Length: 136
Image (cartoon, rainbow, N blue to C red; front, side, top):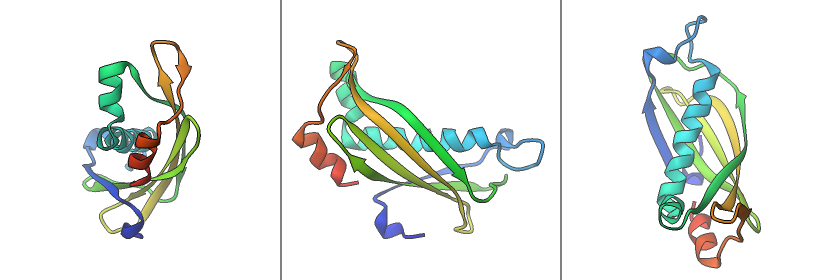
């Protein structure tokens, strides 16, 4: 785990209800954990505020998760997130999910576009927003 590579981390408690018949965390919950980390990124970069004020904001267009090791209850999951790329109107996030022992349990990739919900079209990432996003 290279914590210095990641500016964002989020620790979530694993709930008993997230277990499946095999007594480990069901795969769908990994996607929920990544969603929580993605929303954290939207909040710290101002993307959530931008949407609230202008109806322009990020729209998830792709998400992918590679499962490495199971997660169990009781326990926590640590999701570390960083920007993978920033293009003209899209950006990618990379996530690593760890258990309490620091074992890598999953790697995730998201792609989002900056979308104007007023016009139903993408918009170009401004230089100001790009600089903020690059910090992560």
